[in-house]
Amino acid sequence: MVIAMAMILLVEDDRIITAALTRALTDAGHVVRPVGQAAQALKIVTQERPDLVILDLGLPDIDGTDALRMMRTVSDVPVIVATARRSEADIIALLSAGADDYVTKPFSGGHILARISAVLRRARATVEQQPNAITVGELVIRPRQRRVELRGEPLQLTRREFDVLAYLAERVGQVISRRELMNQVWQQARIGEEQTIDVHISWLRRKLGETAAKPRYLHTVRGVGVMMVDPQ
Image (tube, rainbow, N blue to C red; front, side, top):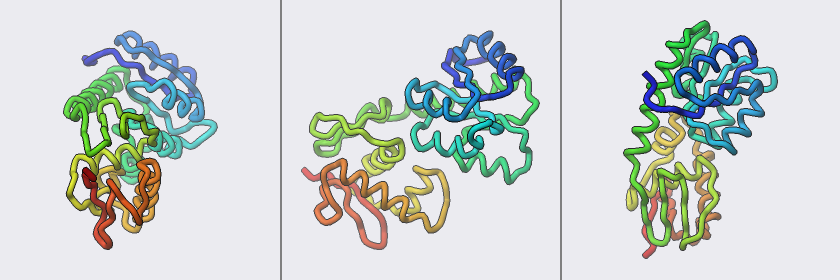
């Protein structure tokens, strides 16, 4: 059973598969938005904010794995990858790139509906567990709406910038290592990616109106990590 109607973006260039999946998902009560190219999908994810994406890897314009990585830079929408690849290395690579789940082709309508139900259940439970708002000085972070305000004015943040800021704000006064941020925010265990963290912290500082030399909220602890501080 599917827990609730969802707006599902179906990214698949095979018309026969698209028709069959659209019919199965619609019969289950979902609203389906089918597209055949990754570029279209990225635009819809950004502008229409679907509840879930089913992403085929064999797309004509952009490799599906690359499309997934690009999607993850702008959205945390749950993604189920549909793939013919079955090796453990391929599956690990997909999950590392940001997939929430995967199905291997061929699959039945009942199979994909069960996967959709499980992924949506996890995603909605995560949202319900988040606090309504986190206040640090004049900074207000609203995780459920993914909005940030500074002195009452909205800040425009990328997905990663928001995730880093929210993670630090939930741990005010704690020094968070770059490795922890990579593990918990990027959900990857890469070594030697300190520059990625530093760049995002730099962008956040600029939007918060501070600098590394004169920090207010984000304080670097040399050789350890970064700490959010309440400046008031």
